[in-house]
Amino acid sequence: MTQNKHQKLELTWIGKGEEPKLEPRILIEQPEYSYGDPNSENMLIHGDNLLALKALEQDYSGKIKCIYIDPPYNTGNAFEHYDDGVEHSQWLNLMKPRLVLLRTLLSNNGSIFIQIDDEEQAYLKVLCDEVFGRKNFVNMISVNMKNSAGASGGGEDKRLKKNCEYILIYAKDYSALPIFNSAYEYTEMHEVVERYRADKINWHYTSVLVNEGKKEYIGSTVDGDGNEIKVFLRKNPIIKSIRQVMLDDNISEKEAYYKYSDRIFEAKDAQSSIRIRIIEARNTFSISEDLLSIEYVPRSGRNRGKLYEQFYKGGKCRLVAWLRDIGETIEGVLYKKDLQGTYWNLTSNINNLTKEGGVAFPNGKKPEQLIKRIFEMTTVSGDFILDSFLGSGTTASVAHKMGRRWIGVELGEHAKTHCFSRMKQVVHGEQSGITKAENWKGGGGFKFYSLAPSLLNQDKFGNWVISSEYNAQMLAAATAKQEGFRYLPHEILYWKQGNSSENDYIFTTTQFITVETLDQIHDQMLPGESLMVCCKAFQKECKSKFANITIKKIPQMLLGRCEFGKDDYSLNIVNMPVEEQSEDEAFSDLVIETIIAKPTKKDKRSVQEINKTNSQTSLFD
Ligand SMILES: C[S@@+](CC[C@H](N)C(=O)[O-])C[C@H]1O[C@@H](n2cnc3c(N)ncnc32)[C@H](O)[C@@H]1O
Image (cartoon, rainbow, N blue to C red):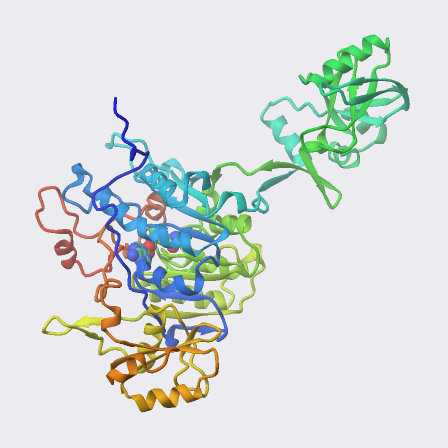
């Protein structure tokens, strides 16, 4: 069989590899929707997230610590050609360039969390493996967001009810990803004991080594690597059951667990090479004592390299396993510590979801508690977080209350009706969601932006011209961005509008540039400085007048570089639900469902045509 050397494991789809060359737009502040602290770095962006992410690329590449997105789930209703995979292809075409940009924005030690349902989960996983690298896959969390009674599906449907969603986690670089903060669940130890009892599960940590007894060295043995293991007899130790200490000390069970928290153990029949050596030593030294201890320096495990003491009990040398080793004592209280699993049950947080944030967003709003968990694990105060499918503004609300800096992008009008109004309330100390847990009292602010229109558009003769919507300042900022300069006008020197390095400047003007103008500018330039002049026209002598001044013509200099005049990089897949639902209905389907006129396979209109008949804002539109 011949081997195709280009063969590799990958997902292909219709349109793959035809990613657009995006125009890096500037963002325009809409002061009437900015709120609170005027120096706030928080950004609420109204517009298509593909262009918005491109707009953020210059200033935020490598700066975002955590991204959470909850994109529309591709509910399978919007396309005619469902059977030949067009719909999946379209969805993947929408997602891929967005994920590529999101990856660019992530910091080297950052991570992205993507929430999805079972429709596209597998495809998304493979796509993410391609974009982020399979080695950077961290986990997939299954989130139970509704109890079965409230879930959609079932009944007449042949499928099971959907009550789970999934969150894929990828690191930008797994090797640089820090260990998740507070990735443990703590339960007070006595509560654990009571739970075991209620569930009729045997609880083995019931012995207390009240007194370790007198320590007497009897001899040494060696471990598999030849390292010394010292063996000690324990003369007259005192071992009691929990019940016995309760009686003897006249204390409750809870008090016993508090008082002897570091002395409680279970004697385990643990299989280990060391234990075999100790059993041998027991015979060699003819030990008759019930308790003995050893001292050695383990080569691996969490006590690696440290002198470690271990106890063995009885003729069978059962290992003394301390309760304290499966827990952690915090302020004198022993807690059982369990690493958070990949199953998260959020059903208890769903009860007040409709009311959270004071905005109605029936089929898409996520609980603040869910997002808090994610940011707690991945970020600290002041870190930048991003959500480019902001919906009702949950991510921004949580980030704000947790003291993170945030950027949220939302396409629909709900950027204003929901996100803006929700965040305004948050600045005022809004009371729902995680407010209490975070002791949130209000404060801070945010700036509201929209995307500038395309810099160039075609006139009636099909020629590319500078958009009439651009004023001089916008043009200067946009050209600077196109050329990779930071727009930062100098207070005095009009031609210093931005710089790419300490001595490299840019000047954009619609005026005709003459040799005299260039001479004047050159006179003001300091040794070592260079300048790029972008203008509509110039005297031809200007071209090579000065070695440190480059002169270019707009729009010619920009043509072919990226797609101008294109505002729509989206498709109408699903629509934002606007109808008020009852609480039950709201919980019954968190997956965004289309309420646009649903095309059927027989409907021969295009998706765009169908959506034109619908007056509401569409997602991915
Ligand atoms: C499932 S909702 C997100 C809900 C959000 N997690 C919350 O808790 O409110 C998805 C959101 O993505 C938005 N969206 C879809 N396509 C978009 C695009 N191309 N650019 C920006 N936002 C988009 C939709 O308008 C919708 O509000």
